[in-house]
Length: 478
Image 1: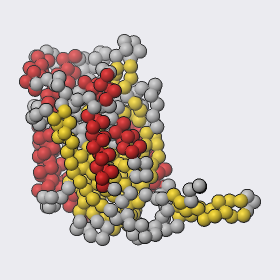
Image 2 (image 1 turned 90 degrees about the vertical axis):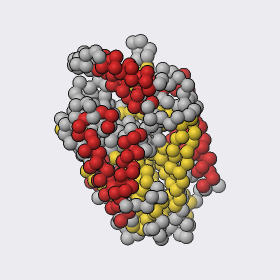
Image 3 (image 1 turned 120 degrees about the horizontal axis):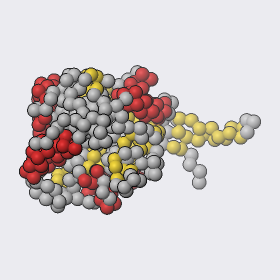
Image 4 (image 1 turned 120 degrees about the vertical axis):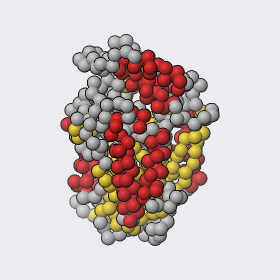
């Protein structure tokens, strides 16, 4: 039998948002690439943004379900993340039980904001900047809650090939490098949630896309949000309302044209995704209820008439948040932090002078010392025991689910969740609370010598276990 009605996914809620410019000062420690020959930021390409979005009950704005904070920085290490959360909770005057969740935009050009790096050039600016970041982020939380307005959310998606698979096998020697892989083409989803007040005013949008913000790399010395900056600008110029970017699972995805120093490439990448987001956004402009077949119309041809027929009395005000933990086993071959610290000392004892113009860019000792410091920063704060308690936040929004997970899972997580719930909208954000657990590659990826596998902290199969638990939770919530 032919389908006569196509449901329009939507949600009724109260929605509020706010944002602040939280760009670090020029001269702050900036080096986020082992191959970089510079240490401090020389200028600003685009501002770094902190944005808060509040979700509450449609008829009861006091029933606060979630406040989502997104910040353009790559991530914060666990001790800094805990400090920031505590400061924002204190300074925003929200209830201690308020579900406040951070998600990081993951630009690698925002500055290396880590208190462990205070001895590095420009590191003296990190602590004062974190104080400012906490204060301004707390302001966004307060303002987002104050801005709560009864609204309807609608959802649509498009696609963009700006991002690409990034596990490439070097034809010269067969080793895997982290870069554009043309042998595995992808058409990646751009998801849009559009929020409109009951009087038709545009309140804002959330755009998700699964691609590492690594357009700008070792040659870039400017503070930048990477491609999300131009993406948001493109959407906001057309819609007249704030756009919040949420990074989707992209452990194995990066820009097709990336690892450059030219900021124009980052802007072009962002505009590609921004225009795809606008295509999805505009598809919702006349979406007023379910799309229904009205019957045949006799004309030069016999035509089939379809119309949006209003929202009817379907209750789409379901709004519920749950937080849960999935215990995932550590790898058994992880090094001890003391071992890594000893290797750092060995590399530091050698010349740290950049080898600009050489194939290894920064010079082997300088690059390897940085690689080891990052390994130590991953290992040192891990919870003790045999399993890692991975945090998941799940928000029900009418016909949609917003899933927020720690770390950097592979894109397959998102694909599997969408396949499991074809009649629901599944939005997934990563780097929730940072990246303490590092990458979550697919099980078959552990069979190859990949960068993401090399730096992963969890055992093979953890991504699939995480996926299964999320599917179970969503199934139980329906």
